[in-house]
Length: 419
Image: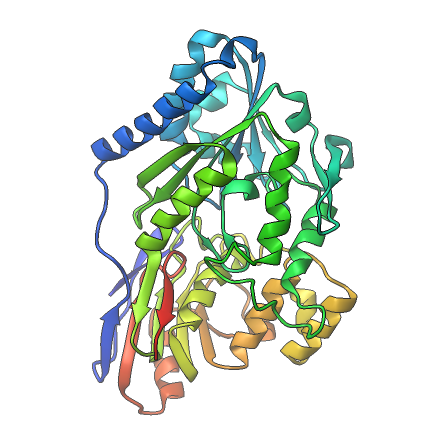
C-alpha cells in the first residue's frame, strides 16, 4: 500500500492476518473540467461585481497560506485576466492567521511566478499591532481586530478552499477573515471557545460539519458584518488537489453551498470501528507540521476501537508548528490540560488537549521527522520508518486479527461510525 509522506510516496507492507479495507471515495476531475469549473465561478463573480467595478480603485484579494491547497497558480491568472481591463490597484494578502510568516520563495510558489512578479503579495502578521485596526465586538464578546488593509480597500475578495475543520466545523468561508487576517488576541479569544467552561474539555458542539450550534464558528462568522464590500471565490477540491466544484458570491451563502459538496465528497459511513487504522496525513502541505497533521490523527481516531492502534505517516518537516503547543504536555492527563486551559488558554492549546485525549484511549504510532523525545512527550509512539511502525503496531495488537482500515487521505475524509 502506498501513502503520501511530505513530497514523497512511501510503500507500507501490511500484515496479512488483518482484513483490510481502504477508506476513500472514487472520482477525480481532469484539468479541462477543472478550468471550466473555475471559469464558470469567475464569470459569476464578474457578473456580481459588474455595477461596482467602475467605482473600485483599491482591490484587496485575501488568499490562503501554504498549509491550504487551493490551486492559486491556476486560479489567480484566470481571475486577473478578467479584471485587467478595469485598471485596479490590486494587492494580495496571505491569510496566515496565527501561523508564522514564510520565506519569499514559499510565497512565490504559493501564488505562482506571474502573480508574484506583477502584484504586491503581503503576508499577514497577527502579532504586528501596527498593522491591525479595531472593527467591533461580536455578540459573544470577541473584540475584532483585522489587518488594516481590509478597511483601506474599496473592495475585498476572499479566495479559498472548503474542507472539514475539526473544531470550527468547516474551514474557508469567514475563516479567511478570522482567523485569516485577524489579530492574535482576537484569534485566541475566538479559539478559546472550543473549551467548555464548565468541564475543561472540548465543547460538545465543536466538531466537523457543525456550524449551526458551534460556538467557535458562530462567533467568527459575525466578522462578515464589518466587511460589507466583500465577495468570495470558494472551492471544493478532490483528493488529488483538483478543483471539482466552485461557487462565488457573498461569503456565508457561498460557503454553505460549497459545504454541501464537501459533505458529499468527504463523509464516510462505516459499520464498525477497526482494531487498527493505518493513515497518511495527506502529504505536503497537509503534513507540514504536527498542528496540521493532527487533523488526520483526529479523523483516524474516529475509526479505531478503544485500545486499538493508529499508525500515522506525517513528515512534519517544519516541526511542531506552534510554540504554544508542547508546554501543555507537562501536564499528566487530559483533565489536567483542560484545567490549565481554563486558567491559561493559548492558541493551539485545544489541539494539545485533543491529542492527549486520543493517546489516553488508543496507541498512536507516528512516523515523522520530529525528535522522538518530543513525540513521546505527547503520548505518541515515535518510529523512524514504515517497517518499524508496522512491527510496533503488531506488538500492540498482540496477535489480534480483525478489521483494519487503510486511510490514504485521512486529512480529508471524516468517518461516521454507526456501530
